[in-house]
Length: 336
Ligand code: COA
Image: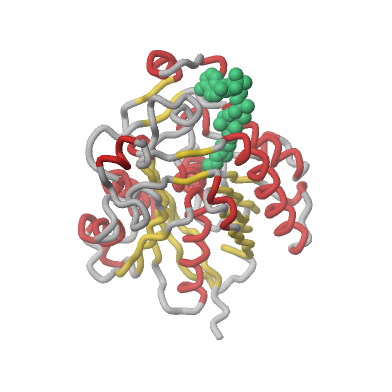
């Protein structure tokens, strides 16, 4: 058995230029900047105007490769966590593989909604830990603006578009890298957060379009409660079984769905706010991109440093949720 650990050695992210601010949304639905800020913490989101998920994933991976110093031809495997792939098939992983010239890589898409990045990170880590591959790219990204209903004030204010990627490589130092994970699913949650149209159950017809079935539906209140409990309990579980308290954790990297969910989770973990990565104000909920976006931004700003202990936590449709414990092992790239 290999004693390798998988470790994140680089990250990169991309958000499209166009902004959708709360002021813009005030003109589209019956809402106010004040309501959105106080209920969600969101101020603006980025929106992809043309193109598809792969058009955000490619610049994110290109930046990640630049930060790592490796070339695309060295990549062994590409895993794309998304609920808004370019199309059902071929997989966005294959589209990306061709676009970046990762000639020897194979890859696939993975669907677990807002927990997709954590699921994909854990799956990718298995291949590195068992010695199969040495360079695995895990991408999280979504074009949520394509499935948000901009006549529904309950939901359209929450989401934005972005993609981010990390590189997994092996290390023989088993005190570093991805140390532990807890992942869960509960299919009974499918009743309160879903997109019914477009799949084999409800293939696209005039009727499915007229009924708005190709939009995301969410009962926000029902999701809110379980999201706080799920993220906090998964984080507490992983900390407890690794003998850690809030004092030992340098950063909580939570899925960015609502600032109030993040604050409640941090409070339950007895973590100071200064130890919690938050960028929901600038991006909204970018679904699969939220956690790798935080890692990439904080790392490139020099705030996430080698040797720090971080807990990644997510909750999403399915329901799916979990936490991953990481000892950050990427060389510092920041100049400051
Ligand atoms: N602007 C103004 N008012 C709005 C509004 C908006 N954009 N959206 C909803 N409201 C209204 C509601 O209609 C309701 O009015 P009523 O009391 O007259 O019926 C009132 O605000 C309160 O709505 P409520 O649903 O109780 O708000 P909330 O505090 O629960 O916040 C969410 C709503 C969606 C922001 C919140 O529930 C949430 O973030 N849920 C979880 C999202 C999430 O984690 N998703 C996971 C996907 S990963």
